[in-house]
Image 1 (cartoon, helix red, strand yellow):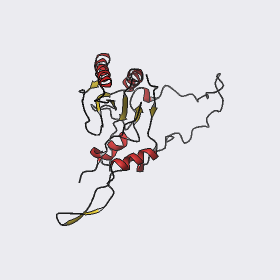
Image 2: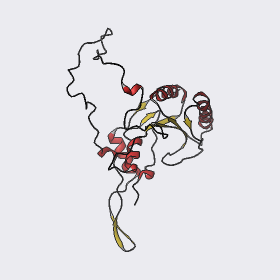
Image 3: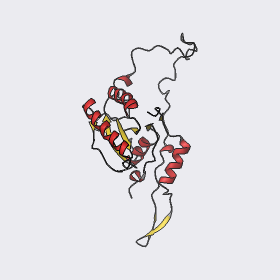
Image 4: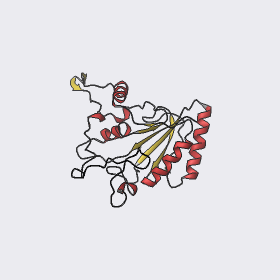
Length: 219
């Protein structure tokens, strides 16, 4: 079984993939004898993330002591566990959409992968009946370049259990794990969807190039 590889795309490679997949820079043209401007693909890397230390500005300095292993650091105590153990961090969705989508890919022209993927799909439905599992696609659909099936998780507990299980049982298959986040006021839904599938995405195994066309702004 290939070694588990969980990674987020680097900005340089992700920018390159985005520019190759959707080279739709602003350019003048003609339509019905009227000059128009082609819509620009939203760039998720223009989004400004808030500081992770918001709310901790007045916290005391972190201790520099190490634990008994001499390597890991002693963390400051806190009252109770983080709320992230009990509910998804905002702006992750907590409605029927689910906080995360997991897309498991297989090469539809590879009989061994197709067989393994279908067996995995069946096992997931039996092992995790509380999760939402969609149909087994036999070809590309939407932004997904090869065949796949999709699983939704709704709680941190489901995410932790299923993703850890999938790390072992995905076998030779790749998986895209992306969040579903709410659309902030003033942003377009396609911009948020694109960001969820790029900067906020997690990959298990080999990363596949997605088709960004479905995330283009509507004219």
